Length: 372
Image 1 (spheres, one colour):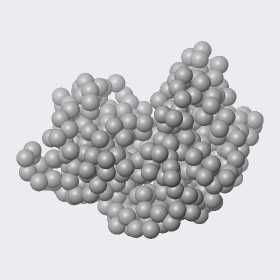
Image 2 (cartoon, one colour):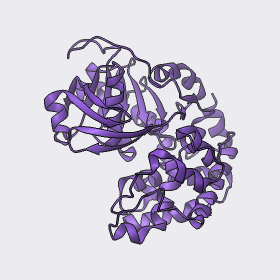
Image 3 (cartoon, helix red, strand yellow):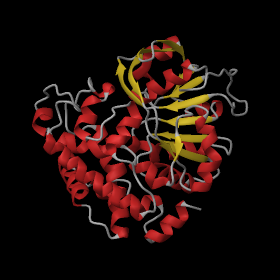
């Protein structure tokens, strides 16, 4: 679990405060992160483009959590002033939609200094590299970036709080290069000591159950979702045949990981490490994970989660597979179907290798760069 520490306050116009945490976002993960860190004694600021989404939090200076974390916890300030926010916070968690990370990095860049640490709270595949490339473009290359996965099963509660149904017991962290991971890991582990260093950035990005499962389950239940019928996503949305599709996706994930000199644990084992399920059967594992039992499907197919998983994991995965000469028919099919459903060409709009600075590198050169 998290460390219980306390730090002093801050004010605009003074050096970045070493104990003050900033969270960018006002949605599910951002609220859960704020409540959890605040409950551990950290001073927390929130940056939101639209503070009215959390109007009660802004007015009262407190965020309410229910579920596995229950209580009302202090928030130092909710602001839409990015310069003020950056001047107050030494560690900045970006917990917005993944597809907005590049834009957020560009907006933050003028206010960042070497002492800042950016933490991507759901990097998907190579998110920290995409953000690093954006920062270089905006002359903020000295800022450190590290990524992990979103750790909470949670749902927003009106404009004042968050329900937290589960906390992952384990997942990976990584910076773009191994040497930087070793330097930065202790700064993230002080918040989440259960995290583990990834072998490389690709292992971190592909150790993500949601990126494998969300789009496939949604496509398999397209009619129910479009009719806006309530559907328990991981329980009613699954069948033996749905799992066959997931298992093919998993094989393709594993093949690409192997090509880039890393490996993945099975998705059933990943769920066990996340929440505890004690089974090697993927269907039984998903149905037995307690935090998933009350998770409903979105009421529309063009949901941001599907766009994130496709654009920010499956698209770069396609590019990496192509460089390694690996066929990914299941991944290709999912990308094509989601692109058609969204009416967007996600291969060109998503996190392609050009955005990562890897377009001209060979597979071997990418491996060498990551492991430097």
